[in-house]
Length: 114
Image: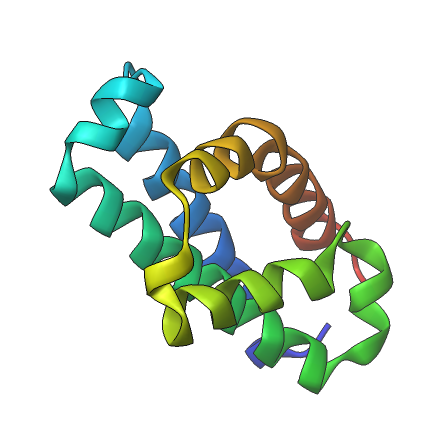
């Protein structure tokens, strides 16, 4: 795997780890009430989406190894360009349901010799 691609995958790992740290011990209500945490989480999701976009540009075959890769990039674009329509409930749901799979997929890629 190309060194640049590995760097982007590492960035995704780090951003996911930060998201998990930011929401640890949070309920949806406390997440929603905390502007700082919400901003930090959304910033890390932007990093995830951009790093994944760059990864796919450099190594298109990796897209098939990351569940919902296109949706992740699209979510980044939504956060960046249409942030006013982003629902806290949607972000929270992504953290709870989709983030664990992304972490598994990226960890698997980082551990393999693709």
